[in-house]
Length: 88
Image (cartoon, rainbow, N blue to C red; front, side, top):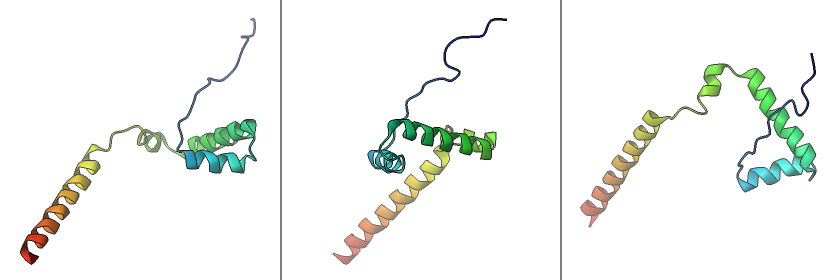
């Protein structure tokens, strides 16, 4: 059987906050190849240490938690506005 030619991996791009990028680039001593190796190592370690459920939480929409936080923020704002009206 003939061997497949080409890469044995898929190429992806990752969007990072600028500060995170520069921190990782500093760790990699300013070398893009070392940066790629560092990122690959971080991802592979996380993949080995995590369960499928933990990894799925990264892509799941935490709608309930966000709604609860927004509700609490609205309540706090209402309390603050009532306190300002009472003190006026």
